Image 1 (tube, rainbow, N blue to C red):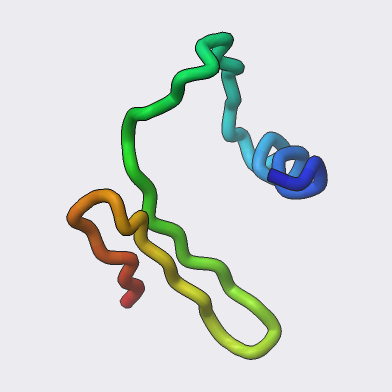
Image 2 (cartoon, rainbow, N blue to C red):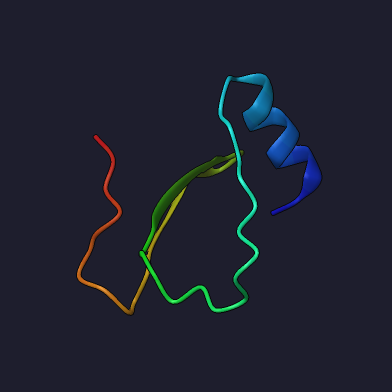
Length: 54
């Protein structure tokens, strides 16, 4: 994650924690990003999931 993104999220009140374990095979993610031209959505292909916005 770019430092500017992390800092922006922290300014909005989000908190972060470092995990010292190098083996991070857990969880999955979906993300939606607003760009100048619309939205971009993605879903982790390792899990069942869908990135959707309404």
